[in-house]
Image 1 (cartoon, helix red, strand yellow):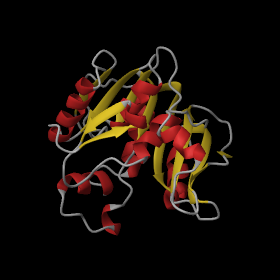
Image 2: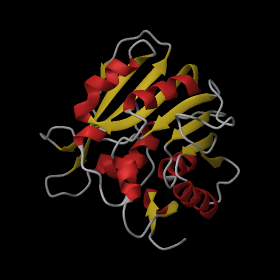
Image 3: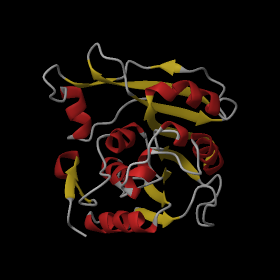
Length: 244
């Protein structure tokens, strides 16, 4: 399972991925950077995929423990291999299961933090890619965004935190789904280049909080010539945290 192996965080994470079809890009790396796991925290990575976000968080925050929940067994097998490949078996695990019918070992209210990178597109607003892995990663199936956020609210402890990455054009829907469950919400835009509209946004919210929503300055990803900005390189290559 070494075909298609890539590196993240400047080579500190090695990740085997399918040689064709869906491959993790920068979104899971940014998600991990925005998940402020602390000493002893138990983190749930919902829709863990091949483990990119879990691995990046485990390397960046060595005092936390991470459980990845992945619906598709063949994808979970990649995640398990990648955890072993990086020597992180003592602090990271992957569990096969569906958020609509979670396994017993993923217990409600047992996580300090939940992070997730849900499918970006609604089922009725997209044509399914021919590759089944890419389709599952990019387009909602039976579980909609409402299901993902409700699941996070069930799994995270009171006053625990949810961090997610999603499309900027679905922010209004995300805020509506968080309302009544989460507060202290921070929206952190990911600007493709200075002066361009954000296509992605990181969202952080605390379960049970009543504090208002904050719009952060965000992160500019690319220079005019397409190179990553120094600030983006610090996150993507050097493992710097994003403060939400």
